[in-house]
Amino acid sequence: MTRTSRSFRTASLAAVAALGLLATATACGGDDSSDAASDGKPVTLTYWTWTLGAKSTVDEFNRTHKDIKVKFTEIPGGTEGYSKLANAVKADNAPDVATIEYQMVPEFASQGNLIDLTKYAGETVKSKFPESVQSLVTFGGKTWTVPYDVAPQLYYYRTDLFKKYGIEVPKTWDEFKTAAERVKKQDKNVRLASMPKSDPALLAALSWQAGGKWFATEGDAWKPGVNDAATKKVAAYWDGLVDDGLVQSFAGWSPEEAKARTDGKTLSFLGASWSAGGMKTSMPDLAGKWAAAPIPNWGTAASGNYGGTSYGVLKGSDQAEAAAEFITWLTTNKAGVEARLADLESPSSALPANPEMREVAADRFDTAYLKGQDLYALASEQVDTIVPGWTWGPNQMDVYTAVQDTTAKSGFTAGVEAGQQKAESGIQDRGLKLAK
Image (tube, rainbow, N blue to C red; front, side, top):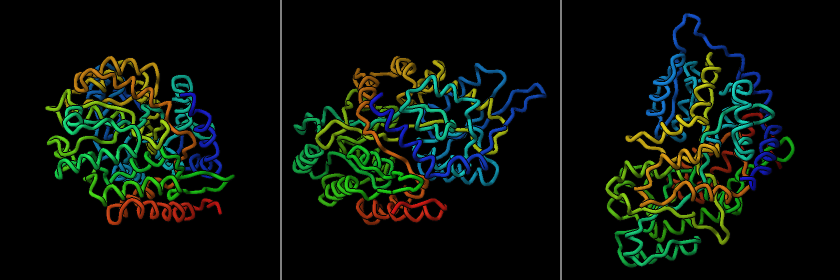
């Protein structure tokens, strides 16, 4: 993971100046919260997330802790979930703890939605996580969230059906297209994969892998590149596959997408380490028929980060110290990691960002579904292929929404153009500088 550390740190520190992060967050975020349990009763925390394994994790924490109790609420993932969190902060009824993906940390911090966790968890982040991951949650000398996992892309495929159709696992995107053509030629009702138009995070990860940089900074100004050359190449590639009928475009995580995989109408999909947990519950009858491989590339081994989560304490919480204790347990305690993977109803397969916890996770993950394949070893290897130099923007949620809405109507190329326009206008609307 050392390969990415310097670039992530440089990008993050540069972003601080352009974001105006310190002034905004200090004024709005607050960091003087104190826990209130003077009546001798346990501190009660509220916790919102969409992540798999959350319920079993909370149950185990509550079973083993007397002074802090956690109430868990499941919320949607993606833009809908972040809108819900932002609106809750505005309405002064936000949860104490919430899951914040790395791409949303700068935006949530700069808008004053997060409490500065430096004095509660800064040392934990500094001592327990690689520098490359620290820099995703620490800006301007302040720690805003605590990392949980890292999410290099992976490629999942049906071993039995690849054999049936005589397909080798594609190592490049050219080979992927050739395989897609071969599948369609053999069976007009079957496709190699589906590329959802409703998942801008996946498009971002694919652009990242190709060398794109959706945001950069020049001094104290932002320079958006949502429609840069690498991203346009990726968008055009997928537009071509969709237009030629070589891949499906089911909505991500939809019943239609799940049914096509279950019925053998979709032979593979683009995911990350966290995808495997959901497969066990959504496709239980296909145990032993799936395998994972590195994501196809453009000629050189590379990956983008597809998600990756951290935990933050939201503005309005008066229990930051207790919240930080819960978060530390979630991210660095063996029992916390084991509990997350032990949830049989919604099992997690996230790759912990804390290297010490990866062996714990690997030991707990049931490898039978992937026929004994060591998913954690593969995912850990792919961390080193994440392309350095990516920076998340100050209005990421709005950019995602613009990309998603336009892609659904007019395709990926139009989507990235809409994302670029929203990035430019959003930066100016927030009073930030736009690089010329």
